[in-house]
Image (tube, rainbow, N blue to C red; front, side, top):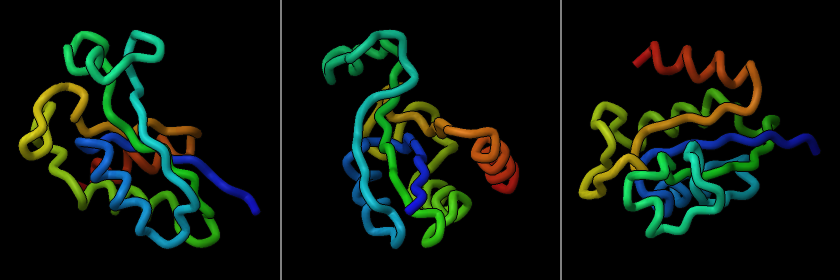
Amino acid sequence: MQTEKATFGAGCFWGVEETFRNVKGVLSTSVGYAGGTQQNPSYQDVCTDKTGHAEVVEIQFDPSQVGYDELLDVFWSNHNPTTLNRQGPDVGIQYRSVIFYHSPEQQASANASKIKL
């Protein structure tokens, strides 16, 4: 089976992970930090807002069951991308809305989906 990877940040990673776990075709999820300057930061490091990391969920999915565009729809519809560096009560740059793409095709799809908002 061919699998693909997607990585999204949309607030606290625990809630985002739960949302994507329930999508048919998502095979596994893992949470962590991405987009910062420090290797292997701790939660305390990230909370200083000095490392530049975002809380993210990495998703392994079966593209024959769920497409990347469908995952983008889930991403956009499950958080508020217009609030700067916050989601609900969680405030800090680590809670920003962000997409880390893994191919030129994902980049194009992500950019197109953002324009459609």
